[in-house]
Structure formats: structure tokens, C-alpha cells
Length: 450
Image (cartoon, rainbow, N blue to C red; front, side, top):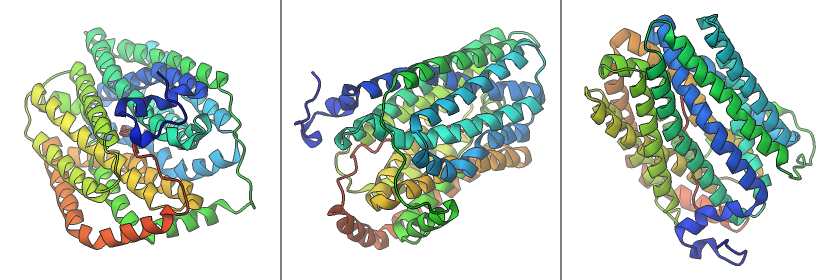
């Protein structure tokens, strides 16, 4: 039974709270399109590092490809946030999805004809990064256009997380099996990865069809034209000038910087687990399982109390999982630790999102949340470059061990800092509570992929 508008989210069972957004036609269309598109996207996430590793066998190049694909997220996220306020968000999303489709089809054509080289992968990865920067930023605001009732936003955020991480379980497993099965002889890797790229390219038709059918009334925000740099400066001063927001964003950025990117997973499979591309897919799928569990955990927490402690303990857990991963030699243990890692990372990302939103003035929310996205997505390209370089110099196991210990130390430092932060958090929340409606309790955010 669909929930009625008289239902209070606080009184609903958890499963009905999550499904409320599907009562909106626009969101149903969007959700269906994402179910098709994201499986292809995650298949490509397996295929690209497998292809690059075949072409170069270099950990540094693997890390550099991750850097090239994700650097636009770091550079364009704040600007894309301004674009999403000035232009029609549905059309902006359609343009970004079309760019991503063309990029995947070009990769497919080059791989299937055997003409691809590492320069092609670098350029097309940068193009994909631009498309993803616009998509990820614009989507944050577009959800509110599709789900106009604020009380249903928590449901939409939760369903977004579910479909992304569900695709994250299915897509990498399919991609890994496809690459591992078709790449049975020398040169077969080009055909296998080309098929993955082709599937991803066609999968964007689902997202584009859904966006074409959606009807919203997205109107650019009214107000005086202020230079972008001045708007960004004010948002940065507001966010980083408040110690609790600054602290949780810096902790989030550190964890994302030191997280081992997916671009190095072929090296993990070969050198640490003595396996092949199928294991790469299973490792990424295990991350999806952990993220889904983490999302359910966060969604089940109806109260926002204890968010700062949850952020700190999640960072510690993420570090411990990375530290333990440095010792694994069998696939089953590696998969179990990836589930733990993704669960903790999902918990930290979502809890940080929820906490920052609860501490932010509505007038500055977009700019502050762009800094949150930078702390999550913006660190991925830098981390890819750093982890690739470290792995080349000291080896992958020592890289996991060192980064894990640094994460644990940072999380414990935050635990010790909490008594100083809590009074400031409570005071700011009390000041803001009378001026706005409550932020959706679910606060789910997708675990980023690197």
C-alpha cells in the first residue's frame, strides 16, 4: 500500500519509509533508468583497470588512470554546483549522460578493433570524469525536483544508494566473469573489455529514456548575479570556519585519500591473491555488499544523535580493515575484509553527510555540500596517484598496512577530540532547528568508486 501524505515518516516502518519516493512518477522513471544504466557503469569499472593492466602491467599507470578519470571531480564539482542552480537540471543531466554514453562507445570501438592504446584510455577517462562530475553534483539538487515533498527525500536518497550499490554487486561480478571468461588467450582481453564497454554504452539509453520522460519545473534560482569565485569563497569560509564541519570533512578526505582505488585491483588479484580478472569483479561486488549493509544500518538510525562518534569509529574500522587486508593471501578472507571495509566506509560517508547537513544554513547548503563531495570524490584522483606511486615503491601489501594504520590513528584522534566538538555541534543545531525543516533522517550517500 502506498503511504498517504498524512503518514508521519517517524511513525512508519523502515521498509515503508524507504519506498515513499516511488509514489512520485518522476522518481519511478528515474529509478528504473538507473537500474539499467548503473550495471553497465560498474561493468566498465572492472574492464578499464583490466585493460590498462594488460597494456602496461604498471601499478603507477593503473594509479594514473584512476587519477585522470577522477581529477575532473576535484576540479569541476564546485562549478557544476553553480551550473545546476543556473540551468535546467534535467537537460544538464541528459547532456552529461550522453557524453558518458559516447565515451563508452568510443572505448568499445577502439578495443574491439584492436586500435586502443594507453593514450586513448587516458583521454577518454578524463572525458568520463567530466561527465561524472556534472552528473554527481547535479543529481544532488535534481532529486528535490523529482520528489517535491521534503518528507520523502530520505526515501529517495536511500533508494539511490540501494540501486547504486545493488548495481555495484551485480555489475563488477558480471564484468569480472565476462573478462575472465573471454580473455582466455593473448589478445582476448581487448575483445572482452570491448564487450563490457559496449554494454555500458547501450545501458545509458535507459537513463536517457527516463530523463526524456520526466517532467519537472526546475527553475533557476532567482537573485543577484554574484561571481562564482565569491560564492565559493563565502561557502568555504562558512564551512571550514566552523570546527566540527572542518574536522569531519578533513577526516573524510584523509580516509578517501588513503583508500586503495579500484584501478589497483588487478594488481591485488594477481600479486596478493594469485588470481585473475574474475576475482577483481568479486572484490568490487563484495564492496557493494558491504555498502548495502552499511546503508541499511544508517537508514535504520532514526535519531541523528551520536553521528560524530559514528564518524570517528567508522574511520577506525576502515583503517583496521585495510591493515588486516595487507596480510591476506586467500580470496575468501579478502572478500570478507572488503565487505567490512565498505560497510565502515559507507557508514562514515553517510554519517558525515547527515552531520554536515544538520550543521548547515539552508542558504549555503549547496556550497557546503560541494565541499563534502570534494572531501569524498575529490580525493579519489589524488589517492589513485598516491597509491599507485607507493605501490610501485614499497609494494602493495606495505601500502595497505601503512595507510590502514594512518586511518586508525586519525579515527582515534577524532574520538579524543569529540568532547571538545559536541558542545559546538549541539549549539549550532539548536540555532538552526527553528529556522528550517528537519533534514531527512536516512542521510544515505553512495559509496564512491575509485
